[in-house]
Length: 443
Image 1 (cartoon, rainbow, N blue to C red):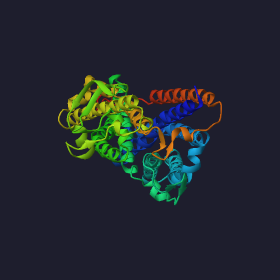
Image 2 (image 1 turned 60 degrees about the vertical axis):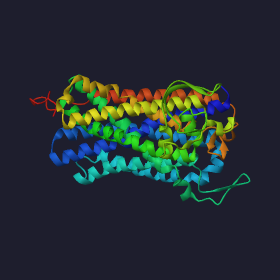
Image 3 (image 1 turned 180 degrees about the vertical axis):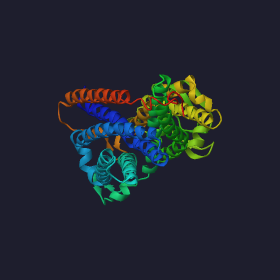
Image 4 (image 1 turned 180 degrees about the horizontal axis):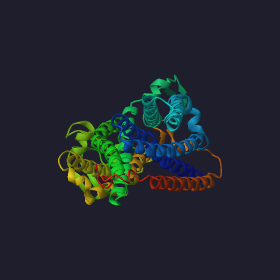
């Protein structure tokens, strides 16, 4: 493995792991806050036990997210020094603010974990809410930095020099809102379905049914609402990408030729040699409408860009298809859930219905990873779009390949530890009210 490929692979590996830890860490505190609020309002101790159980999960993912995030910050400097040399002063503000949000999150989590029976009840609840709000702010700030790479702003690039730097303009670039919205909804959808799926599995196994039924409902509502809203944010993102990064849109849809009334391609196998897409399903004009709001609008194809400026078509297209396909599936499950919640409550106890959520446990995170592949691979060959190439930003330091292997082992070990801790946490959930005759009923 050459140094360039090793550096890119290590960064991809680190981001791939961190994004899951970060998304769970920024979403689960909201589940925890809802269950805590319900306990304060109703006095039902099931919600108190649920809050405590979820808070342990929040602590686990806060720790792993902090470790993996710290590694990423070091990797930016060590693997991409030329990039950070120029980009650091421009987009450093969101990273600095993210560090502040992280410290607030850490302090609030400490108050929450150790504040039981020591703090005012509502202040204690508020500290848990702050954990979620600061975690969400951290995620949005990091996405703003990534959005800057896709939509550079806040500087003038003159004769190879970065002049007239404006950090605020860089942070609030044209891409930050669409990316932050899409990423936030993806985090809630993936984590909501994963958590709901775990509790659905416990219900199928007939474990502490009152506890898991209430947990399932809270997580499922969050996940399903986010999944239903995600297509709207996807539409905003598609129109934004069509304006800013037409080469990325062309790669996402494997559109080799510029067309009017461009079709939306479902599935398909791109062939770069013949510049055709085989085994595809086309919906005429839909891509033009989605990108520009006009069924007959022209959509730029890859033929408008030099060969060395084109993103890898196959990887980008397949990742986009996976993301959209899973998103559509989760939206369908969400529709069924709301039908069950409003009209068909008996479905909530049916095995087939619960198995849908169990099946969906990994799907949200697969879509999440696929979305990041679209974002990052679709930007290539640029690390700063149309300004700096990825090949120009990598460190010349030898031996990066060994670093990749070492970090692969570290992340694998970290993941196994997290799985073990979560498994133990689920097993430690107490049998609630064993003398309660309603224990084996879903309420």
